[in-house]
Image (tube, rainbow, N blue to C red; front, side, top):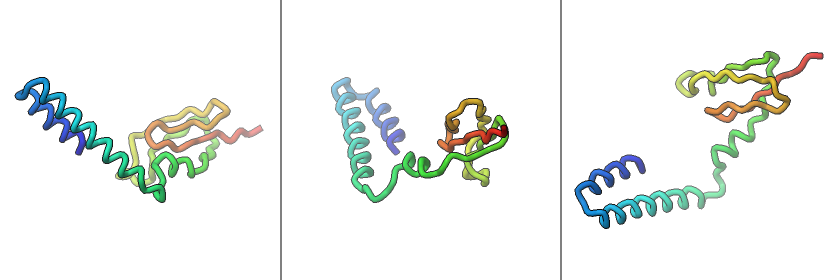
Length: 105
């Protein structure tokens, strides 16, 4: 919604003077700030990052894991192959799931 509003304002700013353009851009900034403040008022809901951090790291035996985000392709993301050579869990750049390698000694 914000991007379509911004595009609309940019089209009108080409026709208007630079003063009007500046006022239009500040209007977009105000609307986005109000939306963010409204979303953050409800402290009973967890943010997406808080929700993903509640998922424990996933243990795998292989050195490389293919993360799809979800077992349902419609809900997932492009496949990301993640190398697990480091000691700390590796994080998927799309969904934030963490993986670590179970070492066999």
